[in-house]
Image (cartoon, rainbow, N blue to C red; front, side):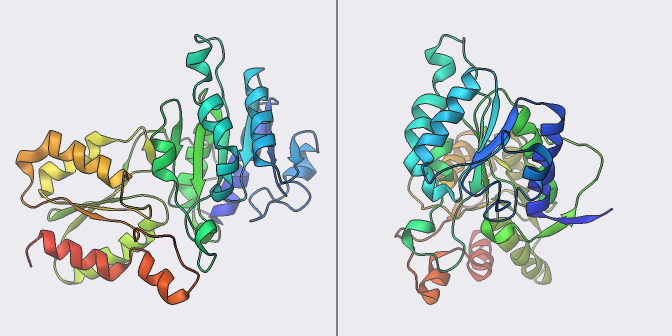
Length: 325
């Protein structure tokens, strides 16, 4: 099977869906002439033309609003943010229009729109370009939130997101666009809302999503060398969350560690911790452990960047703490 980059899997998902449905278009900053800020729309302008691959001014609120209006009138927009940090300029359109329109219109208007782009940190980009708003958007009813961790999942999930009749937040990472994975040439879909057990284990359950999965996998190798068997779950979707898969795993391992890049207060790990203690409390042999980014704006200093983010050593040590070793 061929290997392609994350950015190529994103481009393939969009182009394949656009060939099937003429109502789909891509709009955002530098998506056309420049082939995308991260080359995730490379070749699309040549194939589909400027009416379907649309470069915009630097006006996230404006082109997001255009996308919502287009979706109300039967089109299926894909809105690219150069980074989800800039989605804050458009958050009124996303939260108050896209997410709520179906209810506010009494079911008259579906909003089949995808908002996609990179999220989280990507090195020394400073406090305003290094934020993870995963839990913010997952908090809003009416939205679906997808955060793939590899090229295979990215393609299958993005195709499902484009076909969904509801607004979908699709979060990627600058630090994953060059990652390679085996991706089939034949069509496939991955359902939104279903987690994946990427490694089976018996001693502890580790749950994460997005690019943090790369750190989890490194930590799992170190744990394996110490005869610690970790079961790893990639959430893939943050709204809806596949609680059942986590609960079933915890019933087997009796311990849970949740890792995410977001700030700790009101986070995805907070929600998962609550649901596990509610539904699987009697199976827990240790308190649930959460590993989040530092509760502070991210600094520019490379030393502080390393201190800010979860890393392999922290994960290994926290796993050992819930195993009491």
